[in-house]
Image (cartoon, rainbow, N blue to C red):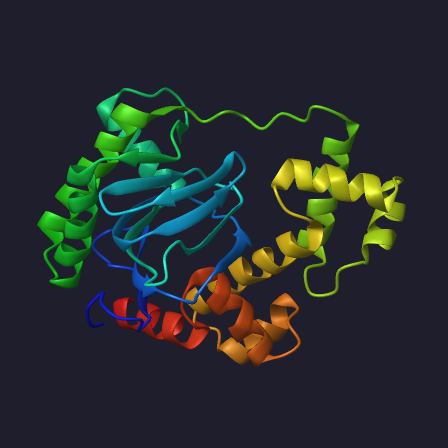
Amino acid sequence: MGTDDGRREWARHWQYPELPGLDLLRAHYVRHTFPRHAHDGYVIAAVTGGVEEIGLPAGTLRAGPGSVVLINPEVAHTARAGVPEGWAYATLYPSRALITEVAAEIGTVRGTPGFTADMVPDPHASRMIAEVHRAAEAGNALAADTLLRGVVARMLTRHAGPLPARTVRRAGGADAERAKAVLEERIAEPPSLEQLAAELGTSPFALLRAFRERYGMPPHTWLTDARVRRARRLLDAGTPPAEAAVTVGFTDQPHLNRHFTRIVGVPPGAYRRERRRSG
């Protein structure tokens, strides 16, 4: 993977079989920008060099070394370099099940936990996150699991409460949820915004506004993100990238490659090779 210096980009997105329910990403990005997207699970990221700019619903954060970024499931966000030399970070992507399990063990949060802070200055936790990666890369399951549970417990104890339920505040919210269901069902051949609005008995502008309010991005951006998520599941199951591309509605493999790399941070081929190696 190399060092964090200079303008060279590198990334490794992988799973360690001894840590189920967790994805790992360690990377140095300079020119790479993550478009607006969301995750099924949580994000716990330690910036180890440079500055990362994260665009969240509440505004833009600048995270430097010693800080930990915390993002809840389905929160739309962007990421990019905040300085010319880019940023390096070690990221943990724990599943909802893993977070809920640790929360139940420590007994501090009832129900499904949610982080109450977007970024915290915590050099100790930042070092722990980096050490989870080092232990996993060294094949030290005992250390990796111990460190993982320790840092998750630390974040939950200090910066978490019950994950707020998404409430539909107005009729448009229900339309947005129905639109999302239609797009999920017809992901490979979705309707246009005008067709979708007509099917739901609303106007295109009203639907667009409601969808952005509910999911933090317009329907076409959400659809690209959903296609990449579904492609990931297909690649996890061993589907070749070209087949996965067509199945989820991309025109061809290069189309998948472009969007997958932007959102996941690594190309689908590298992602699949890591999955096959760890599996």
